[in-house]
Length: 378
Image 1 (tube, rainbow, N blue to C red):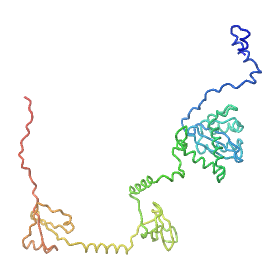
Image 2 (cartoon, helix red, strand yellow; image 1 turned 45 degrees about the vertical axis):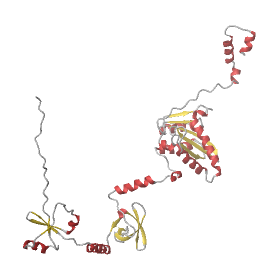
Image 3 (spheres, rainbow, N blue to C red; image 1 turned 135 degrees about the vertical axis):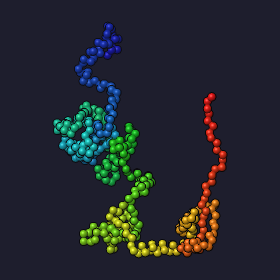
Image 4 (cartoon, one colour; image 1 turned 30 degrees about the horizontal axis):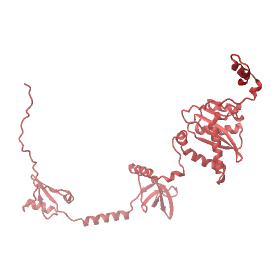
């Protein structure tokens, strides 16, 4: 329009006048193109998990509706299957989530009838939600996080439609893998940021459990009160039957865990905690132990005893101490003469010969000592 006008006429400010006339044309404004899109505006990143929550409905998918709830901080995703999208059904789902994770500060939703009703606004105020932000009509990108997850859920369910299982089972499988995988935006798994830990899945079975086993063994070693019983060991355990004795004998069959054992009594099996088991030593095992000790003593060679003379007092060293005494290289073993006193000592002891060791004289230093020559200033 400006080019045509300038080809025929001209006056100062002709372009501005033509623009003013075009903008004031009502018919032109009705059929004009949309203005250029503004730059993308990003939501302010929350300070913590479950601070700002985006919600939206998706579906119908396989005859049901899905309520998508996502946390803006951790990208944690919740998908609830429902047959109704009314305000009452929406409030029931959110009330369950609030009781599980707490009440968020801000909720972002579109302008659906269930989200703009007075009943829904009252529920948010009573629950403690401070802000309820609505998107502009016909502008779903304002609630882009929920809209993006709507497409993600639909694509995942369409991919899993050929697998066996209900829609709820497929959603559970998808959420388990999604929550464990690192997110492209945060670089962390949603479960790590939302729960403070990563969730365990079947993929964790690939990793060895050696660290857990080592820590478990170390705890058992450091616990002084830990008791253990061996299979075949005779014990007494708590019967738990008022018609029987409080403690009844049994035999350990197998260890079921760190603190539980399976016990056999009267051809029956019982499971008891270690606190319900008492150790017992039967007479047969005690006699066998004494018999073994007697045989061990008989097989030990007899060692002659010695008598040490320190001054005028003799001191007898028993046989047990002879084997553990290290002889002094400076001491001399001298045979005692046959005197009445010595004969008395020899008759009291079973040793065939008596020896004495002269006392060890400490070696004194022979170096010459001089007083210190201290410095005296002149």
